[in-house]
Length: 305
Image 1: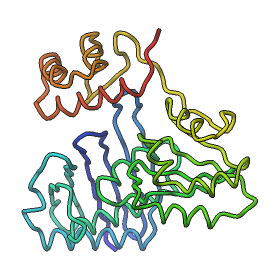
Image 2: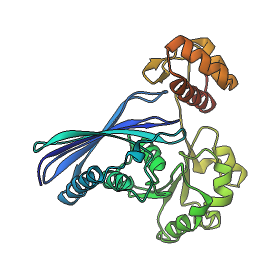
Image 3: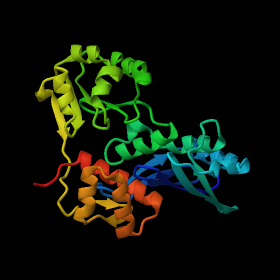
C-alpha cells in the first residue's frame, strides 16, 4: 500500500463543520478536528486505522477520482459541501468538491470508508456529538449506539426517527436483564416525540430503577411528565451566555454585540441576518447559517442573570 494523505473539509448548511485527515500506508491514523463555534471549544480526536481501513479508503478515493462525475459538485441549499485533497507520492495531488453525495455513488462509498474509521461506539466523549451531526448529513449515522461503559449507555442520535423504532427496540430487548443502563437522549430536540414514537418506553419502564436518563436543558420535564422520577434524570449543564454575548463564536467571529444577542433571543431571523452581515461582513449564506445557529444557541443555553 503506497503512502497517501487524504484531507476532507465538511461545511454543513446549518450546523458546525469540521475536517478529517487520514494519512499512512499499510496502517495509519485518522484525525477529526473542529474549530470553536457557538459556545463549543475546538476539538481534536484521533483513532488508528488498520490495514483493511487504509486499503478501503485508498481504493475508494481512487475509484471516485477515476469515475469522476461533475454532477457530484453541484451545490444545493440544505445539505453539506465537502472539499478534499487526495495526495500520494506517485501522483499529483487531486482536489475535489462534493455536495451531499447520493448513497449509490462512488463519492459516498469513499466517505463511508472514511467514516468507518470513526465507528460511533469508539467516539464517545469530545467528538461524539459533532461526528453524529456530520454522519447524519451523509446518512451514515445509526439511530442508536451502545457504549460499553459502566453503566452501559444507550444513546439516541439526533437523526433518530419513528421509522427507527423497531431497531431501537431490538437493542433494548438484547440487553441483559440485570444490567444498569443510562438512556442518553441529550442529543434530541423533541423528547416528547421520542417518548411517544421512538423509544420502547414499556420495556424501559419495566427495567426501572436500573435505568437512568441523561438529557440537556429542560428536556427532563418531558420525562417527569411521563412518570419518571426526577432522581433518575441527570441534566448536562450548559454554560450561560452573558448579556454581551461572550464567548459565542460563529464562523470565526466573536459575537459581542447586545443587538445580535437580542435579535437572536427574539427569533428575528431576517433582521439578525442583516445585522450579522453589517457587523461581520458575512455573505448572505454565511449570515443565514450564523443566524440559525445563534438563534438555536439562545433557545438552548441559559442567560446570565
